[in-house]
Length: 90
Image (cartoon, rainbow, N blue to C red; front, side, top):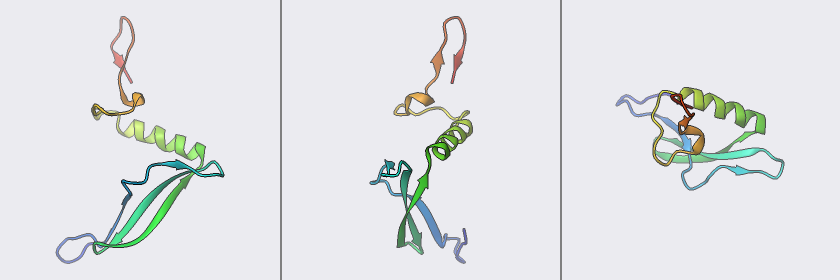
């Protein structure tokens, strides 16, 4: 990502908060991102993932977030599981 002289980022790519993950007719999963340059909207672009790619991304994110505490509204897969007679596991 390039920066201007004052340190501001020229480009920004982020998920569109009002558009949730959706399944396309061909079975792929789509997440829409907004592309901004110099604080001006440039485009919307979907990230398209097959089920296998989404599973890989999910596993990678779970691994990367392993040491982070799960927020109260986190999905079940991020919450600790208590096994009888043992410590919490994820």
